[in-house]
Image (cartoon, rainbow, N blue to C red; front, side):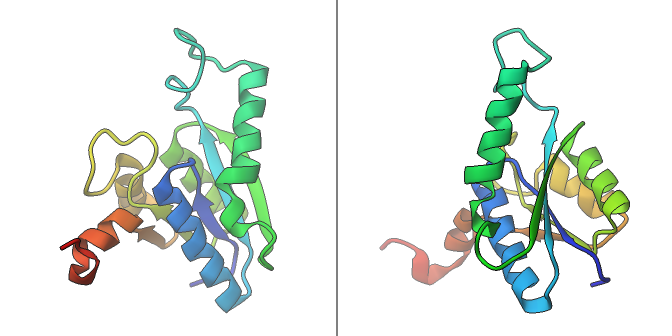
Amino acid sequence: MKEGPILVGVDGSPESREALVWAADLARATGASVLAVHAVGLLEKLGPAGSSVPSAGHLEEIRTMFETSWCEPVRNNGVSVEMQMRYGTPADVVMSAAEQEGAGVVVVGSRGSGRAARGGLGSTSSRLAMSCPVPVVIVPGAQVERESDPAAQPG
């Protein structure tokens, strides 16, 4: 891993929370900082019906969720963290931020809040794995780990 912050894509999903936990562990082990980035662009399901442009109040609501509950795994735990909201599609925002901020590695969950189906990689993690200019770590969600661990199966 080259020097630079550990950039984490954050969207409020359980998978992005797993990615934040993983990134915080790596940051503690390496002394790196964490840069949490949220892409504002997929707001159709969150915004007012029929609106493609979020209101200032809606953006502030997203910012509050992002900076508090979504980034809770890296806040106040001894890891240096910066949080940024940027406009654009998630993959474009993460790749741009990685280049501009000199990220050493990008960490994302296997699927995000825009997922249509369970299992496999989401479109953002797939695109990052193929096109990101820095190494990408795709962290599986807790559900994937439980499904692959026979000891965790009910029974």
